[in-house]
Image 1 (cartoon, rainbow, N blue to C red):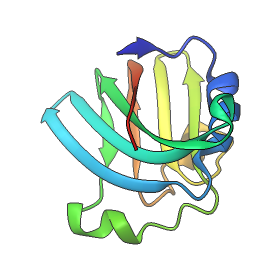
Image 2: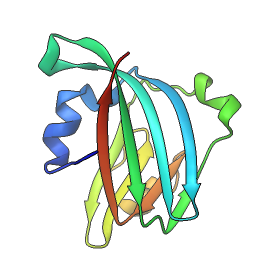
Image 3: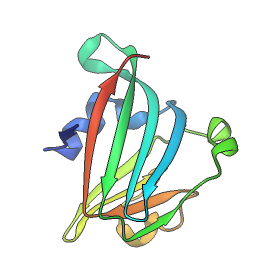
Length: 119
């Protein structure tokens, strides 16, 4: 796992995960979660790959059932916001941490790391 050092560059590289495929969600513990997406990578001529996001120090979350993941509309991609207390993630496009809580799924955590994998 690698830390995300620049959220804007990370999201730009993967086109904000627009039209990505929500593959899986794993709750490792009460404060640790992993999400896997299949998405296109601008750094690799838009080849498809999987990105695993691992959240640590989760303080709040609204999660979807595993059987609903394949049906999530990813047209607007994801939001990752850096906050004073860490990072906020949501499905869809949001501008603030308070707005993120309107998403169908969100995670508020201390940190996020990622791993690139095969499609």
